[in-house]
Image (cartoon, rainbow, N blue to C red; front, top):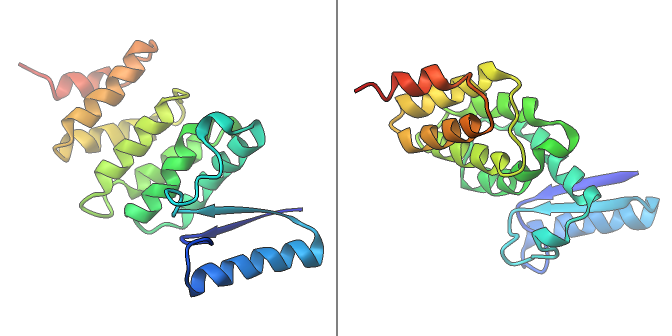
Amino acid sequence: MKIMVVTPYFPPHIGGAENYAYNIAKGLKEEYNWEIVVITSNHEENKYKEKEQLNEEDKEILSELSKLAVFLKKIDYENNEWLSASAPYIHVDFNAPFFLKYLDNLKDKDEDAGRYVSKLFKEMLKNSTPDYDQKNIRSIVEYLYISNLKNYGDEICDKYAKKGFEFLRDIYEKYHKK
């Protein structure tokens, strides 16, 4: 069995939460011999693998991590950090429709949410160009334009247009009338 421990801090960072998460992971490994994967937002201090070193299983785990967004009430700096690690690999396990739905639901929950959502969307677009569900994609892009985040909306529309997708054209033209 594979267990994922998601924690904001983990050793070598020092603290009570770090020790607690470590002891849970260690205990599960020792007691049941389960494979333990730790996902932490303090990755700047703990870079165990560079992006180039990720194997397909690592990418699958990161893709699956995106499903935890369903539990978020809003996107803040910390949530954005781990979602950013997941976003480029959303396509690996066909999680894009779920991820786009979560982003659409979170886009207006906080004054900075639009920026976070647009950056996560652009991260996802680095490796794939999902076109389902277009309703969620259109809703996100429309929100970016309405929220004065025109540059982000333009970048997303441009990515889709360059791939031959036309379903955002009307939104783009609506906000670029002369």
